[in-house]
Amino acid sequence: MLDRILDQRLQSQRRNFYVLQGFRDGDFIANALAEASFLNLKIVANDLEFQSQRDQAALVGV
Image (cartoon, rainbow, N blue to C red):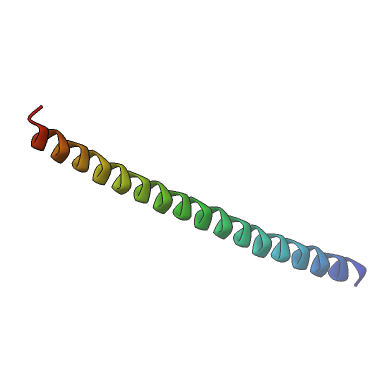
C-alpha cells in the first residue's frame, strides 16, 4: 500500500515536471520566433535604406 502511494506521488511529480518543461520549451520557441521577426524587420529596413542610397546615386549619376 505504501509503495502505491509513493509511486503515485512520483508519477504526479514527473507529470508536473513534464508540464513545466513544456511551458519552458514554449517560451524558448516564442523567444526564437520573436527574435527572427525582429531580424527580418531589420533586413527590410536595411533593404529600404540601400534602395534609397541606390536611387540617390542614380540621380547624381554615380
